[in-house]
Image 1 (tube, one colour):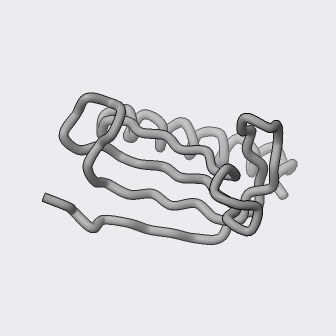
Image 2 (cartoon, one colour; image 1 turned 45 degrees about the vertical axis):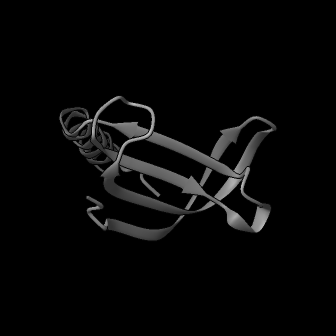
Length: 88
């Protein structure tokens, strides 16, 4: 069953694809059918810039436990950057 759990937002960043680095314009986080992890469902992360074509995409699949660890790593890095006064 499709979960239709999906959140998409604009971002500023860069991703590395087959042809090198490219600017990113949006990120999508979803929980739905997995394609490559072997699980029935997974967290799906898509970092894209469709203005550059469908090749301007970095995709990630992970299980929920890995997603929780990743989220804590993101929070810790953001908090450290803000505490250092270097966060933009």
